[in-house]
Length: 210
Image (tube, rainbow, N blue to C red; front, side):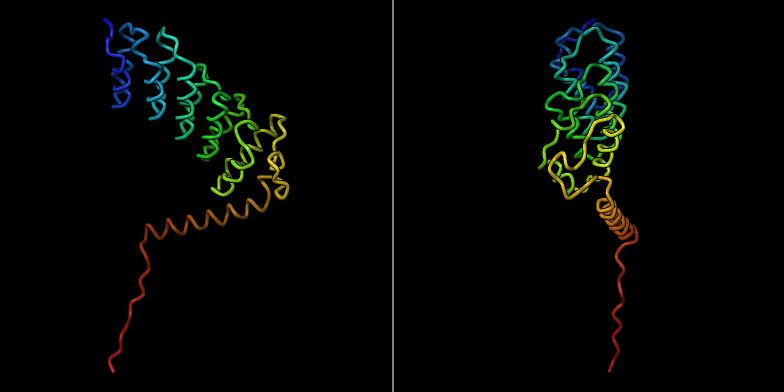
């Protein structure tokens, strides 16, 4: 039995029918056209379906396009899907493909575990970010990602500091200046969360009759 509609797996992934999709792949022969430029694996990665990605990559004889794997990796990084990213890299996705856009995406998402994974998998940090991108990450308060990037690079012997992007006034992304701003932001978020949970405090307006 074969699946004739090349969009069938894509639609199943879109509908979260994980078990159905896995059953189809394991039980029947799926022709290359079914994988329609890797759309199913991209869709599965976008929704964090790790097991579906594993089956699409490793339990089918069809070789997925490398471009599809790389695009799926970017989608996984955008939503912090660490396990999916690991599976895609094992399956052939390249951490430094598409101008290391997966790494840049993980940094923007402040996905620290994915940032570590991509650096260890060979992401070209210098190529992925320019000075403007790093400044934007600072403005967006992506301190955890920046600290993780510097620390992981240092552990691998890669010399990456703020000066790599011309930020001479900031000796390290782990500097007290950044840590102090990060603490202030966390306190502000905690206050907002408390306000959201408790509701605004309303002071009664007592009127006295004259």
